[in-house]
Image (cartoon, rainbow, N blue to C red):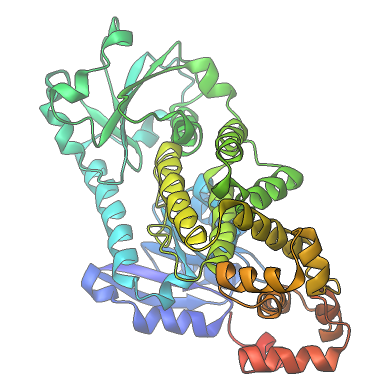
Length: 468
């Protein structure tokens, strides 16, 4: 049995994890819980565990500091982070520190617990098998070294059965080293002439699940740092470099060492999020193609990219409530940017078809423009006649078109946006209710509380006390 420690400052979350997840089915057992990082370290001084499941935002000692300490003091412990969808930038940091996976708390409400535990168990099993079969990577981290040119095999879709690589004749008699989830390095191999061997995987039927990175001119201080650079490349740059139908990628050691994970600035992040949320790209080919190119140029970390599209999908569903947007509801649904582009093209066709069912493209564009105006000014006093003017339509015709295309009346749509924003502010800040009301466009606190109660079923002050 793998022994598990749960760390979260929310008692209800801890109890929910302990008593509702099918730990026994995956040979795991929760042997302890703690409400912050300091308490977790005190527990580890007395008990041995195999898996640490930790929240990131906690008092006294947060999850990031806890992870760093555990990696230093207890390097054998596997770490899984527990978080909300919106915390993707912090999740990326946690994965760089050494977390093997993360659990989004919303998954616990979607009855995906078996999927989550199964994925975590598979990753642990892979690492345990690799440790048993191959020499320990850590034994080579002490000395300065020049890394030879080598091949790195990358599993594309998480089906990390490295034994499939044994069908390659040049692999069969050599040692494969696991350097990260879904990554294997081939030792003692002459890479001369490999720049043009792009069809190697297809010859053996492995091109659907695997890619090869040919690394040349490589220097590193330690193997540990070198492997960390390769993992960072796979998690970020390779996400954008990957091309469907291409199996071989060339990478210089200098590029690998000099790579930097560029977190998007707040302004770029907001601009990109607004662009994908706006829906202008649905009706205009040029806007869509330029937005694809701009996103690819900026190359936001996958964590930020998922945060952008999580917010965008929320708005798309508000605009078209019955829109099916799978597989976005799964963790890491797109292993590379080209897959996400294909998904965007499919979503665009679905949105375009739904939006254009009744009205001309010109009318839909006008309503999209009005929705964008509302989203930017919902915290101000807003009248239907004013927004109809923005859409360059008569008041009555705009009202009818808006309801038909958006699926809600003008007033109901504004109210839904304001209440959704109010929920975020109530959960994420401790500011007084009147401040939340004003930020959402309500300048009378009592009226805001009444509207909130009608829509949510509890008062704002009561909502704030609900478990997150």
